[in-house]
Length: 602
Image (cartoon, rainbow, N blue to C red; front, side, top):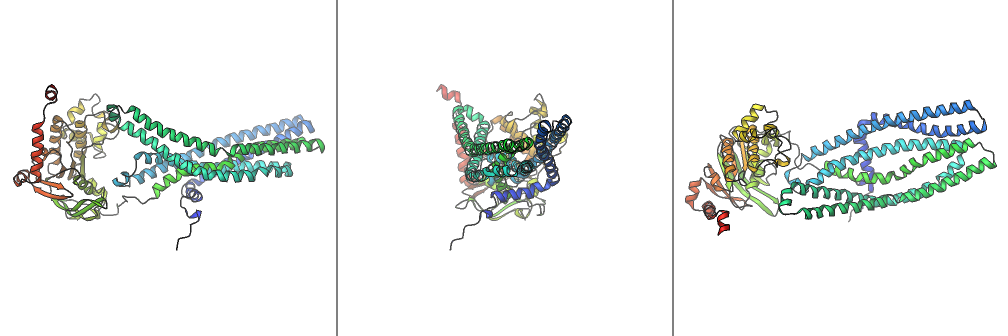
């Protein structure tokens, strides 16, 4: 039996559900400030209604009673009302902006905090620009929703109520005639809202595509320039921008369709009021002040009435961004907080993989019942063909992913039983692709130990063979590394990364082909720095260049997700197995290398 369709209210991200949630979770936190804003809006609404009423009094004082003193009195009251309205509007806008800024900042913090609770695998499924868009546009959309609600329910509604009260007090029948415009507008706006939802969602994602294209072009600018891809990347960005422009134009077309109808119906209502009011003044000798007060109130009420009629349209557009942010916040974290677990305490730092199986996709296992032990204080090297699972071993050790079967132990303790932070705090990682953060050389080294002293930073740099080139910069340790460290050479970035690992003083060191992309001279310096880093620590190193690990205490040949050979360099050569084949192949390729000039001349 099929399940009956749910109600609209069952959708947790339906318009009313999102609005209720935002009001309950965010607006109520600042209810005192919102109450003050509403009070100021009430003052402004009262001033608008009062001024409309007084305009009629001025007309009567001038044309009916011909009283100069009455005109002066009423005019003074008008000045007082407009002054009060100006002060109230200023205070209302300042307070509303402060509340909006506080809510915006809080949502940005909340979203970023949630993103920091996601696993590495989470980010492999989407582009980072999508989350940047949710962080900026999504958080902003929430403040827009709340501002629209408080402005619509407060300023516009209160103003409209006050002005309608003036209209009814001056002429109840004419006020009733003015309401003929409401039903058609309501029905028309209702049809527009359903179109707006789909367009707004598409526009939100298209904006993310623009950010994605620009971000990739700027981050890969060296490749763009080297392959003369400027025109290609320009076309990609142009296509994304054109798509956003087309959707924005469609949004403008749809969302503003109510405008002509509202203007036409408003014109009809005003013309009827003018004809009827003029007839009363001429035919029944009604006081002209009543007519002026009514028309003034009607004209002043037109704009807030128009904004209230559009409120559903504007809310529907803003709610799309709010939903995008809430969807991320609401999803269970892929790396949930486990600070309630005990901290991992190390003594020897012996690492053991016990029957570990892991797969990124269920049908393609990367590691298959892997077993090995990395002895404490010694260097264990992982070698083998690409795709064998070497980098996955380090990812599992850092708990970027969790093993599907088996267990990973350090000093006999299953690491999944302890908090991630305590594990990672006792592990230093240096990869082939070094990531340096925006800031100075000093700041990037100090990331390894927040609060490190200048002496500790310099000592780590000296141990990493980095002090000499750092002091050679005009600004020394205050030198900016540029985005991703692009102002430094590959060898310099690697040595700063090693200094960052050294200052951490962790008992476990993980090195992922840290010298694979370096020239011979840079490799020499980095190898020397790595030797200092690994001394007395349990080290697991992934190596592509086998000559860099010939002195390792244990070499593990990883192939097809299993350990096919294990031993020291000399022992493995004598076995004449897979390692010996890899080593001889690299030696042979090295011997065959011919200088570029010799090849060109030949």
